[in-house]
Image 1 (cartoon, helix red, strand yellow):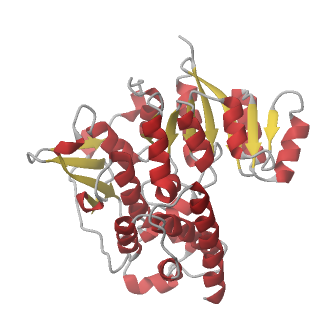
Image 2: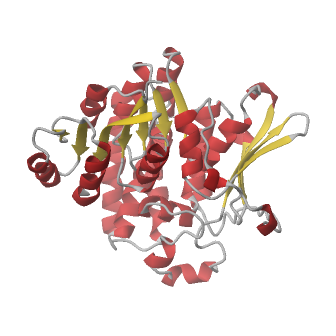
Image 3: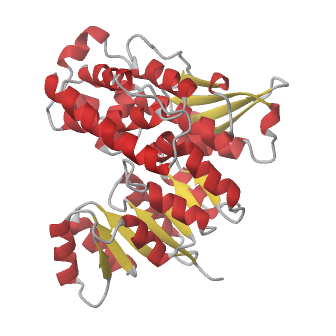
Length: 386
């Protein structure tokens, strides 16, 4: 059996590290061709030593220089001057794992789909900002495939295997409720950053942890699900499920509901995305049913978490609005992590940027890129005025 080649965008982040854990467990099935990171030289060096990639990409020029000198003649090093798209195209791996946060990997994802490759998508922003363009690439290249790595979308993907989307009544995205689910709204004014980024169930990067705290992650998932599964926004619901055992559900027209259950571990959807249509063994992934005493479900508190309604409104508007939402959220969350704005400013700034946006109903790639750049700069202005 010839191993499938894999390139990972965001190899030092939570999803990237877990992807390498899965590859390590199934070393005969996969070969790592490329690793792309922002600037984490220490972790990347350890990954290079273990997996011997053909090439690496670093967003930070100084970090790229360090790796170039350290691995001269052993690894080809790409920098932003070369572009992430060129890095991905050069490797031409069987599977592209898009695990980096933000929108930088959009062109790489589209390039992989055009080349008939599999994209294991863990990046919400790509489909949010350019869902129509990405899905068009997928449709026009039948040899390509896109398998979601987000636990919720991967759960729905599994539930829909062998089913017709025409029979679907509703998609139900579940979420733990994040770190602030039980925190009174009045305490948001003084909530610490440490509390916000400390997710109760999942070990994730800081940006997505903040999105979980505001419930913007569920909002982005609504838009993402609409594109992946070709489903109207009106047929996508969100339920808070604190136990995080049911990763999402599909309700069908006949009243039946299929749910995907599993341990709270990102390796589960990653393994599925890499091995589909097979299912590789994972002995440590079994649920202990004797410790599951109840399943609880709650409607999300939309007053307490206004980002969810912002996302629903944007999803219905579609066009260029989701791109603005994604860019504004990405930028204001970075400002929050850099202590430039308060937690409560996050939805306020996003709403302000959306109100200043000139909507485009069917944006092309150049317009998407331009609108994204505008939204980033507009968000920075709004953050500076807070």
